[in-house]
Image 1 (tube, chains in turn cyan, orange):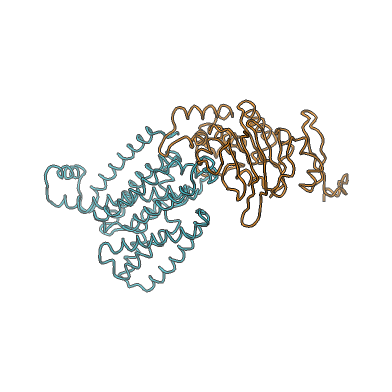
Image 2 (cartoon, rainbow over the protein chains, first blue to last red):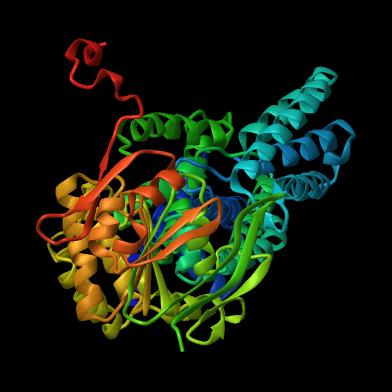
Length: 335
Length: 272
C-alpha cells in the first residue's frame, strides 16, 4: 500500500465520519436518555437561537466538553505513541516509556497532597511541570556528546521513572483517605472534571506538537530502518530524534495533565492502524490521531455508563480492552 | 580529477587511532575492494567515506568537493550504502523501501511523484526484485533483502555505491549472484563500487583494485595479483595460506592452511 495524498485524504475522511458517529452516539448515551435526533436538534438550535432546557445543559455543558477532551487526549496519546515507536524502533513502545508519566504523576500526587487540587488548574499545572522536568532530566541523561543515544535514553527513562515511583509511594503512604481515592482515579485516568478551559489550554500544545511531528513523518519512516540508514539517505538524524522526543513528550505531558494516566491508547492505536493501513507515518500519524480519538471517546462513554451512577476510571476500561489485545500482538509478532 | 580523493586521513575513537594517515584515489567507474582482519579499520573507513564520522586529520574529496562541506541530502545523491544486514521491525513493503532511496530528492512534505516511481521500478527491474515489490521486507530471504537494498541504492541515482560486507550472511550461490549483479552495474552503469569484504577470494575475483588494511594503515594497495600474495596475507592476518590461480578466471585464489598441521591425515585426531 503506497501512500499518496489522495489515499491519506480518503482514509482520514472515512475515519473522520467514524469519529462524528462516535461523538453523536456518546452524546446521546448516559444517565439521562437523550435520543440521537434530540442531540442533533440541540446542536442545530445553537446556531439558530439560544435555547435553554435540561437537554441543552447536559449535552453542551456536561457531555460535549468531556467528549471533546477525551477525543483530544486520545489523538495526542496515539500520535505520541507513533513517534515513540519510531524513535525507539520498537512497535511495542508507548508514550509513557521514557518516564513522562512518572513525572506528571509525581506532580499531580503532590498537588493533591498539598491541597492544590482545590483550584481547578492546580493539578494540571503541577502535573505538566512534573512531566516537563522529567523530559528535560531524561534528555540530559540520554545525551551522549552532541547526540541523543537511544539506549541511554531508554535506560534514563526507566531509572528516573523508578525513582519517581518510589517518591510517589512515600507520598501515598502518608496520604489521607479522601486524597487516596483522588490519587487512584488520577493514576488510572479520569475525565469527570472536564471543562472547556481544559480543552483550550491543552489544544495549542497538542495541535502544535502534532503538526511538528507530522512534518517529520518521512524522516520517521527512515529512522525506523536504522539511524545509519537514515543518515545514508540524507536525513539529519540528530535533529529528527530531538524533534520526535521533545514534541512527543510535550503532547503526552499536555494530555496527561488534564486527565491523568490513561494507558494502552498510545500503544494499541498506532499498532492497529499500522496493521490496517501500513507503517508509513505520513498516513499513520493522522489516522492514529483520529482512531485514538474514537477509541478514547468510546472507552470514556463506557466508563461513565456501564456501572452508572458510579463512574469507572477510564484507564480501567482502556486496559480491559488493551491488555488482551497487547498479549495477542506479542503472540503473533514476527521479528 | 579523481572521483574519491582521500588525503592523509586519521581517525580515532576516544584515544585509539583506528585509521592512520591513509591516502588513496578512486577514479570513476572503478571497482575497489577493502580487505583486512577484524579491527583493521575497514568499516570505519567506509563510514568516513560517506560522512557518518569525520576524520580528525586529513580530508576527503568527492567529485572535487570536500565531503564535510556537502549537505547530507547532497551526499546521498552521490553516494549510496548497502548495509550488511538490517533488522526492521516495521512491515514496510519492498517497494516502499526502494522508494526511500528517493528521499534525498524530496522536500520535507513532498510526496513521491511519477518520476520517482519510474526510477524505483527501473531499479527493481535491474535487481530482479519487481516480483516481490508488494511483499513485506521482513518476509524476504536474506538474498532477496540484499537485492532490495541494492535497488534502494540505485534509486538514489548515485555515482558511488559503498558496500559493507554485503554477502556475509548469504550462502555461496547468493554471494556469487550478488557480486555478479554488482559487477554488471559497475560495467553497464559505470557505477563506482567500493566493497568491504572478509572473503578474500570473492574480493580478488570481482574487484579490480584492492586495499589491504592492517592496523588502520594501508599495508598494500593495487591489483588483486599484487595484493593477494602469501607473504602479505601472512604478515597482515598472521595465517599461512596458499595462493594459486582460479583455474577459470586466473584471479588469485587463497587456500587456508591449518595453524597446527601435525594432525593432518589423522582422522582420529580430527574426530577429537
